[in-house]
Image 1 (cartoon, rainbow, N blue to C red):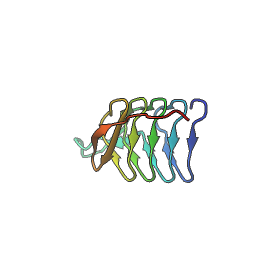
Image 2 (image 1 turned 90 degrees about the vertical axis):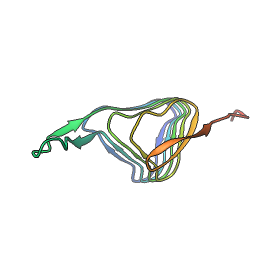
Image 3 (image 1 turned 120 degrees about the horizontal axis):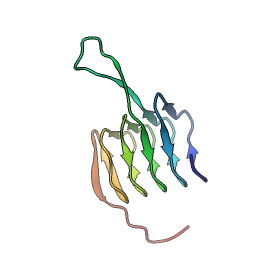
Image 4 (image 1 turned 30 degrees about the vertical axis):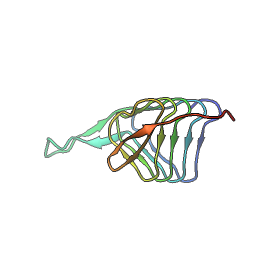
Length: 111
């Protein structure tokens, strides 16, 4: 976890694999970062894991779910209650179930 990053109240980091969080990242309340699942191709449903990577300046909004193997590019915002199943590009606003790119994130002022 990088500098100036924060996990909100009741964030669940289900870390069966590596979760990498960049600098100046916000993961809002009740978000779920999930690195484990099961292989549904087998009746035994064996455990599968894959890492999650959040780039610098990412914001994962309230109650969003990030699935195993997802990488969220630098500066991207994930809308509240989104379900992120695939990698998202940098500097985008994304939302939905499943999460998809809505528009570029344009920075107009520095804080």
